[in-house]
Length: 317
Image (tube, rainbow, N blue to C red; front, side, top):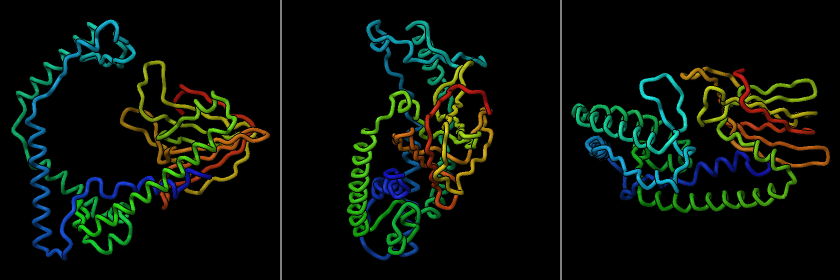
């Protein structure tokens, strides 16, 4: 990678230190004060969840969106009630309105018959999140913050005023450096004489890498695309073939291990993140960054090839 490197990815993850944080006075906090702050934040979360729980469902009027001049069936999905059938596009605005009305009545009936609010669920969630933040403080904040601030305060998104202000400066610097790399990457990559069909097809952000294998003089990459709706005749699986290829780099942690999800589809422990496409005299050079289960959590893979072929809607591997 020339631009979308691990350092660039790290900059992207560290632009929001203070986004959800609250400033507190600069001082040494006692055990009793920290326990009090914990109870305060927990009470605030319970109050917020109680308000959400007691807010009736809101279903806006669709009349304007369903007018003939605005109507497009591709903008809507119908979910057959009580049937083991995939969603489909509606045949008419009336069909959308009918489902909307059914959903509204069901939501109102569920709201009217809901049990009393149980704060215990909020407390379980809050304590679990607190423990996770205690554990991951080193990953979210710079090392100097974890030295200066009690981790229990960090886990509550509470930052002493002086630390808060320094972090605002640091995150602004990270954002500036990140955006400079983004601009340079866009300028360089947009100059590459890559055919539009290859540029359009090479879009695999958040796809699961299922396999990456040598096939004679080629390398084959199989992926499961992230999200999207698949009907009876569509699968989320794709295949990329790097023809007449040479593997320039593949880090050791890039070893996909597949697993079957609850819906029966395959995913893996390796996720496609970003790529750079370059044109050369004899074909293309593809730089890829993956999230992996390795120590750093990231891995590079670089391939030089004569041509890139794509195939969507392939059968499950």
